[in-house]
Length: 232
Ligand code: CA
Image (cartoon, rainbow, N blue to C red; front, side, top):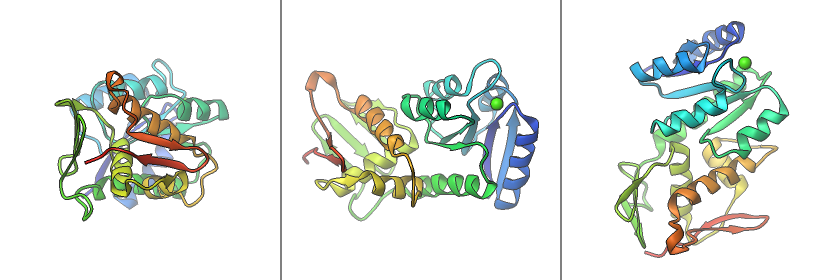
């Protein structure tokens, strides 16, 4: 089965290179040269993943990523960044991107990133440790349907956020290191920057932890990593 990828990139040369490189690996790329054109495609087709350039005419990639999440679409989004300042924005902001890759990148690296993120998503379902549903306090996590309820109301997590939450719950009450999260979720064996983990954790906390309850479900162990503290 071909996987469908939406590529939003204003430089035609780069877009063509990506499309040609991905096709032999089973990825069918639809190219949009602006966020606005990308949105038209998103409204009419289903995509498995979005590759989103940061610098775009009109609505930029960061705004577009936020917009995709606001629409309730939760497919993985990989940002294509050109400069260090953009990387800071991408990993520092809570806009819901799953990963980023810095230009110029090799096609081999891009394919590896895409595969890691799709493999993890396809594989995240039921596990031995989690037979279906986990509940703590006002939180219910259904691993089969990948849904999360807080006080009975659905919480919208992206696929990556769900996979991290699942990993934390699977390993509770142990602390998981950032490196382990980077390796299991993103497939990195080496990553110069673990802020992408911290940003995802921040987003998950913001969505899960009802302020009125002052619950700290995910605890930070400084310099090490994170652990899930919910009780059955
Ligand atoms: Ca651009």
